[in-house]
Length: 120
Image 1 (cartoon, rainbow, N blue to C red):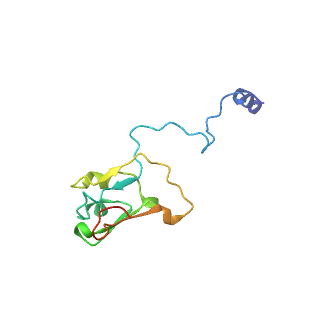
Image 2: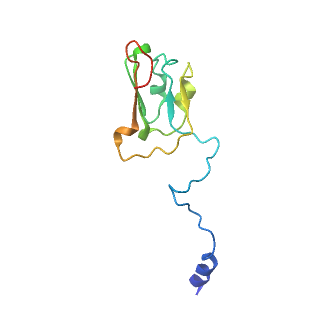
Image 3: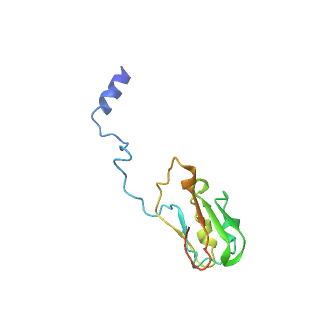
């Protein structure tokens, strides 16, 4: 009998969940998302890769010609990489919806092409 009373009490209440992805909850201020690396500021010191607790950032080479790889699926969104960067080349975005069926879409490679600066 208690179960019927509980059912009737909640039957006409608004659902707590939303119909994602058609409805979305408002963004919460201060929640960290994925990172972006500005290669114009990056000096290739590797501190971000050393500080990352989940090895979400790897670096090949040193200096301004270094190749940085960011594995979004490994990232804990802790912000340590941005905190330790001496040139403030890492920005924490508010992008939190990063799910993908394609694993390659969750790997971002940052490398300066010879003669040009930018993200590839």
